[in-house]
Length: 419
Ligand code: NAX
Image 1 (tube, rainbow, N blue to C red):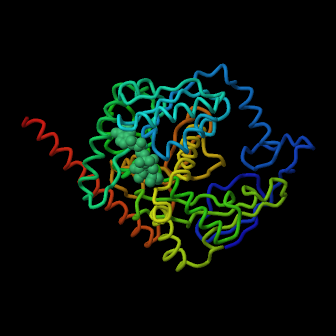
Image 2: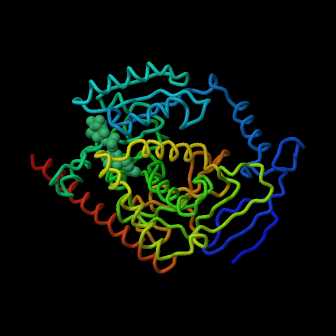
Image 3: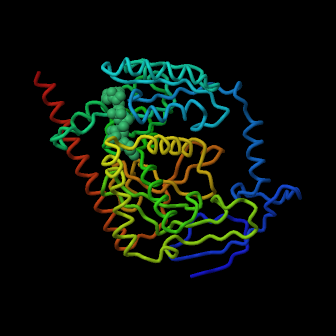
């Protein structure tokens, strides 16, 4: 279906197979002082300049208190890419000072100290302090954000259950530390794998912190999917919106393009376009076989492909995804109605996903106002038969991981009791 709409309202999403031409009534340039332009996401320079000025005038670097950002696995390779981004303001903006709390384990202490030297040598203006430690209490005390990256890596020949037990031990103690020492409003992002289940464990041991403050990273998967689509359609990657990752950060995840669209105004095509064309990705791709058999598999297997070639897992792209996840969560999604993917607590009321799992859903993060810093799951998307099948497969894996984790926890509690 193709329709022409003369509007200023930005579409939150198209229905599958729909393409819409939006004739943008905004002048698209600042020179005529178009004060009727009241959208915040049309991409015109006038609006952009308002947003810029608002953020500059409302607070300056000096009148905000520095926020404390904990990064675990701080001597590792993801952290090495991530730290300069956080300390230079890419995560929380150019007006927010940061105190970094860096945690790693004792064998990595010297490497961690070396990382600190490098951070000092960057002389980042926003970096108000560094707490580098191997002590859990010191690391978790008063932190506003906790990026839990460090985890136990899978070793050759290691059983899934053993990997899970090692990580349960880590995320249980870190959950307890969040509960005891961190700010009660701390926002937590779990990256270390298996990320969804590690997140579930940390959350379970931090009852003082709202469940909605815990999340697991699936933004890297979403970015991988976006990039595949941009390359298939030969459009700028930034013009691809609303690709969704459902479920687990694993090879059962369901990358879904049914609600994705290409927006001629949101990519590198420039903001001076008077006519804005919004096209459904699905109808542009027009090849469900490719989507089902190649695209989905490529996204699911992308991490393994990187490991195969680099002999190390994704690090720069993971760091970039962490920045985008936290920035959108805290400051709001960039475009009105834009959906991003986050692994979050399922309360049982969305798409029939079992309550209590950490499941990747499409979410919208509030921009400003009382809801700032909060996300909401987008609930009204239609699911077709294939999507239900894919969702069930990834949910089943998460249920199995959770059950295994609970079994391991119970066994360890029993063995502690019998000592
Ligand atoms: P590295 O092995 O380079 O670094 C991990 C660091 O964590 C090491 O310095 C290690 O000493 C530290 N560490 C281990 N146990 C710790 C503990 N209990 N407390 C604090 N620090 C601890 O791994 P890296 O490449 O940085 O990857 C980290 C994790 O991210 C891995 O589990 C990896 O599988 C996972 N990933 C998750 C992704 C996602 O999208 N959710 C994508 C990238 C990555 O694969």
